[in-house]
Image (cartoon, rainbow, N blue to C red; front, side, top):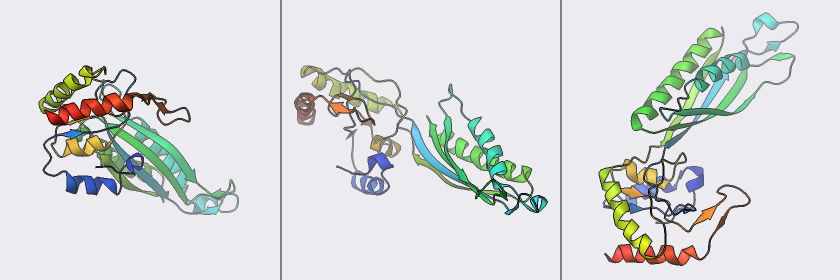
Length: 241
């Protein structure tokens, strides 16, 4: 399968993938290959959360007591949300964008935060979303007259390493090495991919089997064109086994 919206989180591609690969026994994913050709067996899960704070507008000079500051409530949420990050656990919360308010002389009645969440296990995906809801409730309750609304959640569950995926990696690695490619196992990757979808369906999956390259997501991104041939040869050998 080829999908065109992976970088957007596969909003249309994911349902198509899930319908198409239901009976698949293995999944090989051709994300960009690493500089040392390492094979990816683990990826963090990813998610997107939007938190909208509602307050009450008022003139900051004449009627300040009548207002309920949505930005203040959202700021209290942001502090709670960022504290959920736990590096040893592999959970990160990043409040990446804030908007709100009309002007400095108006108590803001609306503010919004966009968050990126990452996690290593399904249990942590559920945990971090639950904690964000609790943080929103607490923040709204701490600023009278405000309330916070939470939308979104886990988008891609983690690609988890299993005995079956390790066996798949080892079988493919023989073919890769036969054509001059590296085939060591990569450390866990922080970004998600469509391999997460296959893995969450219980299908043994490996990733980063595309042509070797560097500079991902930058204007300097490139591939080593000659590895298109060796990658295709390794794949053909594996499929013919």
